[in-house]
Image (tube, rainbow over all chains, first blue to last red; front, side, top):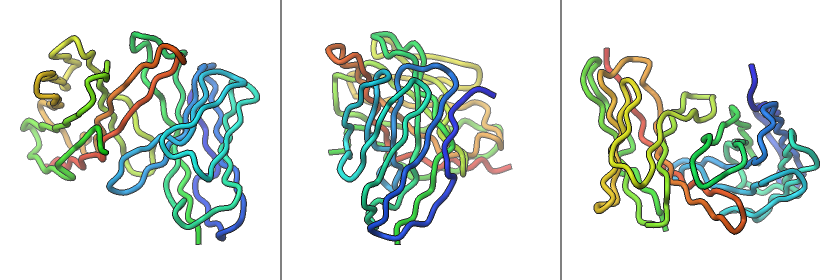
Length: 116
Length: 116
């Protein structure tokens, strides 16, 4: 089934360690996004990429970095994890955004990350 | 500043009755509004959307109503079924044409429980 694959599904990480969350899509979507979901706060955008080779900052980018070397992959890296980064992380993708809502964002199943 | 608000964290409805989920927003620049449904351990899945120039959109058992003057939208599910039990997120889209990207702002979600 076409879609978005996120790995790992869950992880416990010691504070200060680095970690890369993987995201791969097979829909050839131009745009990709990383969100974090926290209780009482909904989903908040961390970083986005409109097309391969470009990235941009979302609402809560501090402590995270991304890269977009090709269309399919959009990894999210925590260089030095802190407990406040404990969250559920969702990757999403969409066709090239336009003035019409051509296709809504499609989400992966998430990575549950606990920083101790 | 919460631009999209879902003031009811939870809602219980008898099977077969109507479920009404509400959402309020503050930013007049939003051009589309979306509802996503989320089951535990899965990513959000798109349910239905409405353009800011319309006041109603219907898809099967799901209808979304938009009251632009009140900056309020609601999702109606009729009749409610046990499989509708999930967390529902309201999201508002802003398209930024200069950068060719869209930004989704999510509410905090409403947990809907359908009682058999």
